[in-house]
Image 1: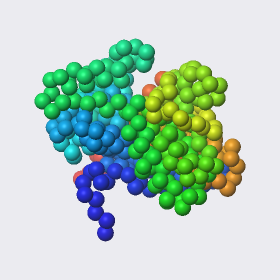
Image 2 (image 1 turned 90 degrees about the horizontal axis):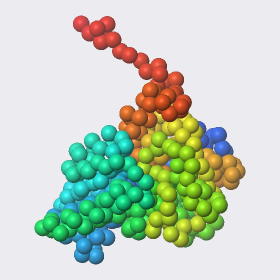
Image 3 (image 1 turned 135 degrees about the vertical axis):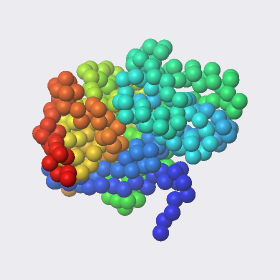
Image 4 (image 1 turned 30 degrees about the vertical axis):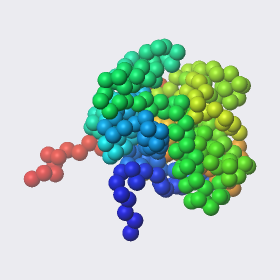
Length: 345
């Protein structure tokens, strides 16, 4: 029997799940690392833990201190839960456009939530920049001090995946992995896994899957940071080279439109019982593209980031999907309505 000693010890060691339809369609083994099975239900639990532990080791975070972060949601949830387990408090700055489900979870986890307008990174009131200034102000008044987690440029984020996610993939497959692909929010997951895997085998192909409205597909294909279009997918998409991305080289880059990624999400739920968020749809679509480029017989790994329930009010709402001119799966339209009056006595 394996017993984990609390929430912190339960982070990581997530399983790889074979994605049957994607594998059969490509002739490859396409595997998703089930990061939604972390205690905070997302891949960001790893970054949250490494960022907090790094701040403690450097003497910046003291008992009872406050952790401040600007986040689209999942990193904030991970930080709040790890902070609860270790005796810290959290203040989370979030764009008001993010899903109500993520905001509700942050409040439930005890975070002080600061909602701000969604503005570009170049704007001084962008949620990331604002969270940094807020951390500076709180550090002056909080008795135990305050730190800025700074997930985008804090390379403890990337280190989490160099130390844990990448080696877990390698060990579980006994080194039999040919490609790794995922989208970028901060860059920590892609860069960290890429560095860990390529250190073990430089021949492993690394790919980025980028949604419309992000600039990294353009950067890795033309050298220019150029963004076009928009996406409903939350938590991914980047317009600059963060510190976590520095030094990363990729072998393939794919731009995944929403019409493609949401269809993957719907298929995974309907046919494989996996209820996942939009970023997982982008990742699996990217894995399918990489498998087609590499050809049959290869093993491709991607990240299943979080549960689809975190985006239910958007991603699984027919009216919202139609407003964005996105496909609505038939099963979502035909969801059965139960008449209790006919079966109760």
